[in-house]
Image 1 (cartoon, rainbow, N blue to C red):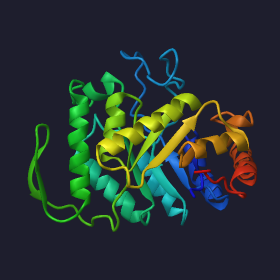
Image 2: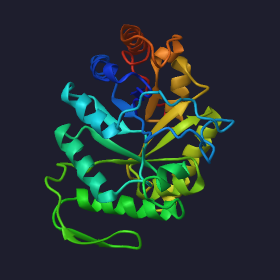
Image 3: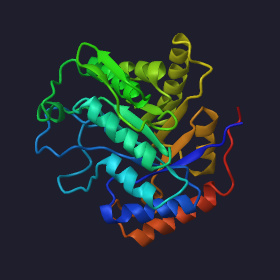
Length: 297
């Protein structure tokens, strides 16, 4: 029997609230904090944002963002149990060796309470303005995941691929336990990547029906890759299921972690007062965490 876990989403909250939000979430029994990623806000985007109906971004140039790896390290320093994962970090515009060093540092400093949620990235500007071509981004990210996992495994390693090439090197210390990789994205390529190399899959905003079909598709793909018997997390943001019966539905179709922002349901905005957000967290925990929700299957 699987108990549904709840992850607190803290996207677009003022930075001076993050540490206390993490402490309150831990006190209330949340399993994790989901940390979003945004490199910068370009005044004009050449591509549509893929997770809204009209392709528009729902944040602006002054919306606060913090590097998720920095945030994870800071929040881990003031907590002792709760986990953190990026949801998701855009790999395509970054360097895998530098990322491996950063991820390993966060994993060690947090006491192995970190999961690495990864995606490709949707905006050409984030690639090109960081000196990386937008073309063939999927293949590049596949190599990046290989490189990061290899370096994090510890010891002297080398890699000779199409995009990345280096002779034997070692980054120390390696994490004490393997860092789980959660692959985000809704495209066919993203789902295949999650099924092939991921320890889980992270959804963005989805309806329940689409989410259910996607989970079924992931199960089929994981069988094709011979990974059906391995543990696999499903981290979901569902836009049309809430309340106890709604969360029971999510658990029953295989969601392991429901990502929630309790204060939004109480009419409190992303930039709302800290005390009001803490009250929402406590109320949510009393309703849905104190009495666990267990999957029927």
